[in-house]
Amino acid sequence: MDLNDFSYADRLVVDIILHGNHDMRLKITMRFAIRKSLTGLMLLVMAMGGLYGCDAGDKVIDEATGNRALKQYEMTRDKMKAIDEKQKERYKTMEDDTREDK
Image (cartoon, rainbow, N blue to C red; front, top):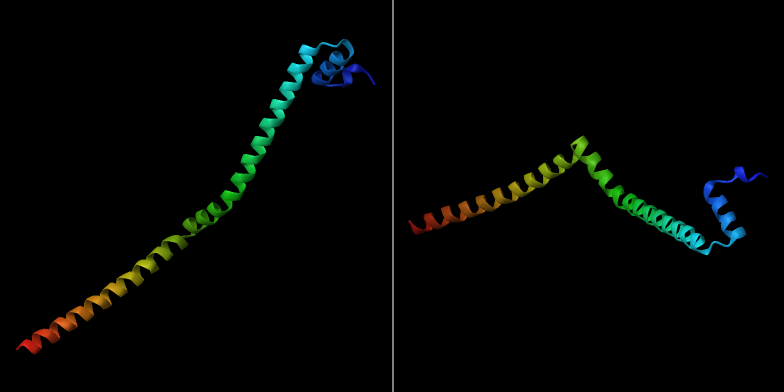
């Protein structure tokens, strides 16, 4: 196996081990530690985004197909029916009260 078969970072590590340059070893070790930490953080963010994004996908599909608007329409229609019934009852009681007064 030739030394050219290794990557630049691997060759630096071999050079540090053979020649004992401890400052360079510390720099490379810190660089790898930072790289590992950032990679772990990126994976964590992607996983959390995937978990929270699942619900949003359903909302987007409902919005695109019009299901969300239909649900809002049905809720509003039901509320309007309830208000209409209350108003009719009030009107009937008012009519009954005016008839009794006469």
